[in-house]
Image 1 (cartoon, each protein chain N blue to C red):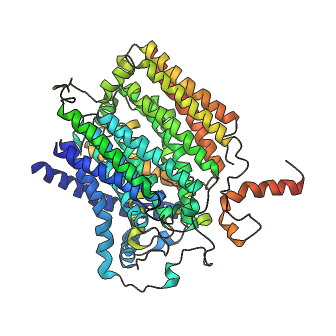
Image 2 (image 1 turned 45 degrees about the vertical axis):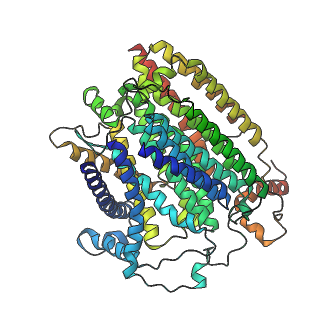
Image 3 (image 1 turned 90 degrees about the vertical axis):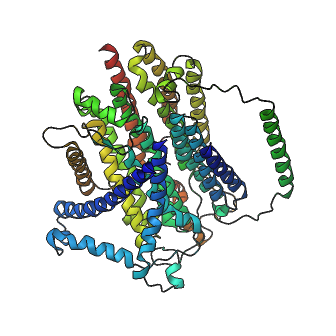
Length: 204
Length: 118
Length: 318
């Protein structure tokens, strides 16, 4: 119970950090703290495997993907702080939504919605063996459906990346020949340079 | 409970160690701040433009493909653990279908040259 | 209270080992590079077997001026060494050091290992982004692409072992090898994939694109000096030890061996694997990024998947 309160508070604090952080990268780091707290919460619910997988997938993969996206899109603004009160009206809505959700949860708790929890759990609950046994018998179809969902993701990646001979260049960045600043985009200009060479040599 | 305590203590100690190590050298260390020292290193030249340059989309594409296969590999852990306890033929077919679907996607990405650099 | 004391003792032991291990491995790395590449320096420094060099290094790192690059993202820059150190220390928990000696034998030890080490990339990215330096950011992005490409083969290469042992608990996996024979012989494909992928995960030559000094100065830690830089190095050498140790536990029977006590065998085997890694590092040149990605995605990935399916098929027939 104490662990739950401490970790829950940490998760909440990190979530607040996500929305109040002034730079996108800091937001992502707060989100990582938040997801790790969630992982610990899973572990306190005896779902060890799920907790570790949460860290592996979310903190290790999804969040780094987010960081890459920031590197891809908002490179120019990513480091610079954004003024705090950019969306003043959202604050009101957010507080309203938070109050509604909190009220709903408290009401549900008052009317005993959560008291039906199983008092005793089977041995090995939440362990990888129990998890696997259920996954590969009862939930076999959803499991295979996951493969289809992941396949869709790959197809989407292909759709995104197939035309990537053209380097992605965010609007507002100087064109290569124009200014000395363009020296900065070493990796970006690579493909361009190559096609330029090809055009000159008349091959490819 | 004991194992979580161990993990917690190790995390805290691992975080404290760099702080102690950096603090430990304070007595031996002198500080002469200088504008030149604090300038970002760019092979001795003055830094040009912003260091946070936009990157090629390839990095992002690889990150996405990685994510898909990372999820796949996580699903293989429980399967591998209980494989010997399941009906072998059935379990094998289950995973062949699962991996097969993803390998089809992998092959598609390869043929579309998404898995090639630039 | 007793559990807390035990945990504190464990972590102090691990930290002392991390430092002693780095001290020794850096010395070894210099010697190996000296003998392999006929470097005069490392073979002629003072003290018994040139040990003064390492001592002088530590003193220099402690005394070195400590400054933050201008325009750095303060918190990212300060926290990156911390984030790189935490997983390096945490993974010692699950290593099966002796027959009955593991600091904390988790039931999901192998998953614990891979999920904790996935934070390394985060540390690299924080350092790269926080430094406000083009080389740092280039190094971090390269490290990202590289670690992404090799983490999947790394995980998949261990699945074959899990299939035979039927457990993710490292102590059980080692125990299975005492009866069954070392998994290296049956899982040789898995081991080769594991070894290549773990060298790549450690950012060591021939996969040191993230810090290739002839291209991008020092990659993500260009702007770090003194003890902060030393933390990255310490974590790197610690990771070199732990990932070799994981390889030993999975493929070479861990503590299993005749006559000597288990932990001696474990250390001996681990240092042999570390030595082979160094041997590779000082023999091969750095590869290009397109070669790196091709090796990961078009060779190691299908090979490791084939290894899993093949292993499962053999187990089914048997």
